[in-house]
Length: 378
Image 1 (cartoon, helix red, strand yellow):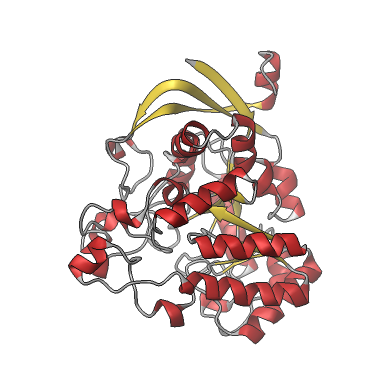
Image 2 (image 1 turned 60 degrees about the horizontal axis):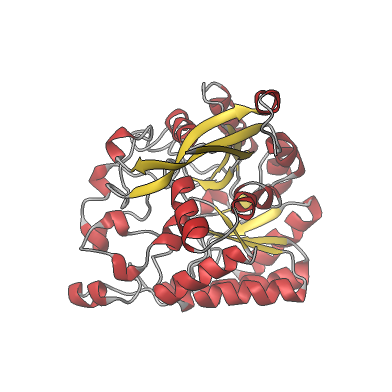
């Protein structure tokens, strides 16, 4: 057993459900889950009810987090359209001034290309990043799962990979003319990875993230009509998973959980009717270590950069300064970690990992000065 510490891990994609559905997750329970998972800082998505689309809503989110006892740091992203409805841009300038980390309508894709160009031009002028949920609903056409044996057996509507690639291709064309920083959230297809890779070669200011579940699992692993395996975007096939892992190893993709808590009542109706999303804050560090370090021979240092240094790039300057090197993430290797959702700090249990065993255990967080005093800073 060995104890390792790294620059504090940052998760730029979490969903806390207040305001809206506090039975699924509150800011307090979400931050407790993050701390339990050794995640030093998080950025919450704006798809609450109501959406975080005004400066006052951003301020309320920050104040709610400030009152929580967790050591994990918190930032709020802000919606880029009013009500996340995709029809009218929010007051991006005021939202940036209020402390938004970046702009996103996560959970919804902005279909109007002219509106998206307006948003990206204004965001570029502010030096802010736009983060896009790259799933074109016109191509998705009501699908709930990628093509696989289970989908065919149950007769489920399929989401083609083109739902993602069409969305990314459109957004890259706007990035090209606006110069705005663009971040592709929860990328899931081999084709999407290749588009981002080519855009980076072209010199476009584009980043992307991969979730632990898309790196560990594929649609062929889904055992039954169990919505704990349902998420948006859906699990890809084995080729997609292979390309995601390769892109992480080459430094193209950062990690992010897309932690999406739901109460049991919304996840118990099978793939066709249940909500999308799984929780991941308390399992992300062991899962990504198992996949990328143990299976793919990624160095621990490069693995840690995908959790720490790389996420900083998409944050506003103020949030970046607040998150940088304030805490250390502490883990134990060669220490068995068995996933038991019943013991989670999160209020939700929607997770496909129950009973899985990993060889790295998140210990928690430590202040930078405490690590330095122990002589273990790196």
